[in-house]
Length: 389
Image (cartoon, rainbow, N blue to C red; front, side):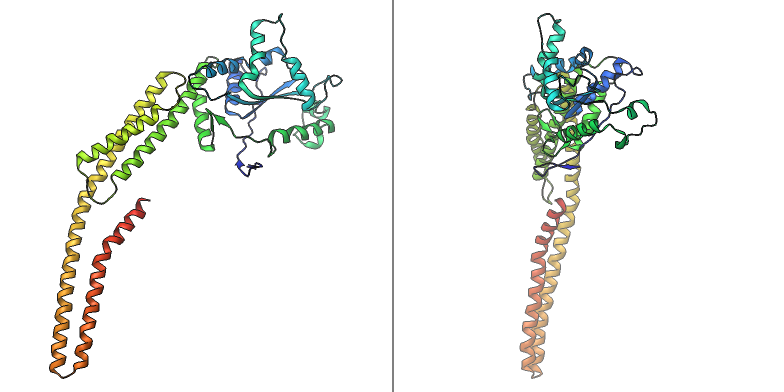
């Protein structure tokens, strides 16, 4: 957890994809891992050795093609990717380009230059890369030292690193993870929370779960599904809140009024879903619309059961109200009879003062009985309201 300069707390997840594009993995496996890590990251550090070779740029062609498709959609959210950082380690041409960010910026400008002699697919990646990433940086790092490169016993101890390499890391890492430079992950124009990130991982992984290379259309459909899932959730929550307001109270609603409330709030929910941005395949939207309708109908059945339960509650309340009325009647009769009898007896006995005292005592008793019966429904309403909250 890192606090930004604005006071927000960011959960920073550092994901290592060591082994990508090595001799032990297939090209399909490498591209799948590379695609997943780029899509879910706010900062993708592309680690290359010595130089940015042509094959390293061609690995980015998938994201250029996806970016083109995303920007051509009727509703686009701006550049689909955030930050790409080329980390060129073991860089040897220090005489022409200095280590660090400044030398890396000059070096990257040279690499991304195009000329008429280059094949079209090579020029397209170079020309469009900046169109689909919000920011592209490059860091040039020296060799980490022979203790690191030649010893099998190296366990990552900082003291074994070459001092020059260590100093350059001290400059690079704060530029990526420092409080001034931290940015949240953005997907489809919205900030991603930790809970949503779990859902995004599942959807993106499912879209790449096959024997073929990742395709731009599969990424686009995964994003479309995420948008529709979020819209469907918002629509369902809105429906439930509306039905909660309509069915509030202890009295049972008629079936007609309950269905009228269902239709009213159901239409509102479907309108909310229909307003979600239209990208990707229409099939994705259709399937999730059907799922939303099923969920709303299931909620209706739940509200019917709750409404039916109020029939029993209403009978019990009526009986209790009758009980209270009986209690009030008995109390009034007893208190009145007690007051009259006490007054008569004490007056006949010649104790006038006790007779006078008996009357206000009886009236006070009557007042407390009346207050109980009058205030009890109010307390019940308040209690039920708190339980609903």
